[in-house]
Length: 356
Image 1 (cartoon, one colour):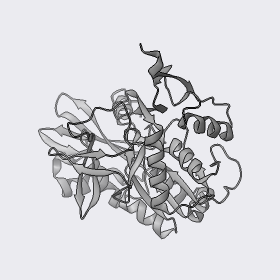
Image 2 (spheres, one colour):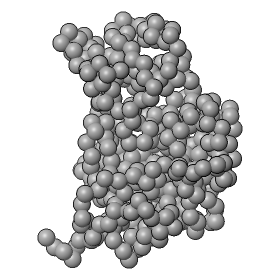
Image 3 (cartoon, rainbow, N blue to C red):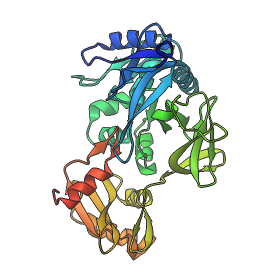
Image 4 (cartoon, rainbow, N blue to C red):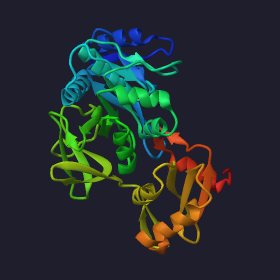
């Protein structure tokens, strides 16, 4: 191993204050300190150009380490702040765990603005006012359904980035009606977090759709340890389309199941249900079946008694009888993977073990 091209990696210490983390991150970005590891990082050395390593958990549950250079992180932060019109001295709040790229982005954007983010993880009492923040749809849902402390915090911000999972149009409309200035984001750890805001690529980023219908990204925000195509595009696992220059995310390419010979998109199933039941948390998933190949199941959190029958009728009318769920499950909470992403694998395992 060429040790001269390597750099020591140091996981962030859970006992560090936000100020200590920011100081270490600033050093990492100018190569004046070790690479920082966020999340379940196991590497001890990385390429010298790597400033930060984050772990990304895909829909399969497999962990992978993503190497991000200072150039990628700073390009992302500068473009995000520019899109929002953020000025030097303005503040961000930290509402997401530091095990994910979305939280790391809040730190880097704050560095660019010369401020320290207000860490609200585990905060007691009322939330202070800030200029910007970033959350996942689950947090937005909670704010609109009883978490008044969070609601007031979001309402007072100049912009609230919402990403990490699909945001339904119904939930977005509720948020807008409540006075929350939502900015939808699309991206992943491999793209230094959100790189498309409100359907538009950030400065320096290009987005296109592959011949197979998958979203692909090009630009300075890309991680350094990715497999790229011949033209240096990163091809994601998400399906999408461009409508009037805006990116529309259609869902993951691996969310289509085959039940009884019929193709069923779990994303489309969830989208249809959300139009009728916007105020409930639910998820569509599949369970292996000798009879059907894959069975469509739906899990919901504290849904009303009429939910199963109404959903079955709704889906049959919209997609045909093949889209009727084979079973409904009532939960107190949905299992999550990453931040705000439902763990469909865990739901399937629970269903097969009859642990609902």
